[in-house]
Amino acid sequence: MTNLWTRCNNCQRILYKEDILDNLSVCPACAFHFRLSASEWLALLYDDARFDITDHDILPRDPLHFVDSQPYHKRLADNQRKTSLPEAVVNGLGMIGGIRTAISALDFAFMGGSMGSVVGEKITRAAERAMAEKIPFIIISCSGGARMQEGALSLMQMAKTCAALGRLEQAGLPFISVLADPTTGGVTASFAMLGDLNIAEPNALIGFAGPRVIEQTIKEKLPKGFQRSEFLLSHGMIDDVVPRKNLKAYLVRALRLFLNKSA
Image (cartoon, rainbow, N blue to C red; front, side, top):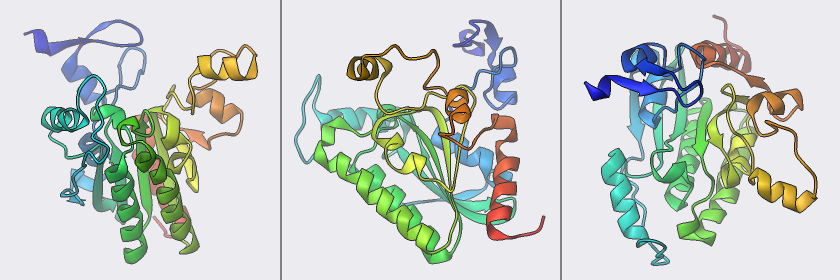
């Protein structure tokens, strides 16, 4: 019986889990948006929750033999076992509102959705596949940023993914970036903010560095909630804030506009 209930991280109410799941993992009391896994994102957005997973066989390595509180290769194995994923991103292909679309969805449960060399490679391949098939591309970002255990190799993925999106733009194909909570660090500083349309979930944490680091750097007190999606929208940093229940319809409308397709 203990698995039937959970506490909302925002309003602290004890809620019946089925009520949250029936509401797209949004708190029915305060509209707090719980995190979705990559597979849940794909099932939510693709028509009839039907899609093909691509690039599933690309596996991360430990080129630096990195060790912090534990060896990196062990940390990878632990996360692969915990999430049943090979890495922190899942690439999907399917139909959204009848429009064939490629999606890369980051999964925060795998090492905080951090971007290592395989994540960058898979996002790049998804963008290249969209170019080859002449279809739109969507990235769902939910990440703490670049993965420190791969050092410069992870930082190189920022340029790599941006270059792939640049080629997608030159091909005249739309790229929509969806920012979930959190989207931070090197992910924000690269592909997450390069969409033809950058949209965020309500109250999502979006930024590069943490508030303390920024305050210490600029020597000023920052306004409350300055890294939340609503603040960023009011200051022109993103294009819209869209509740989860409206997201698919919003994306379908945007894709039809970009592709000049009628309903």
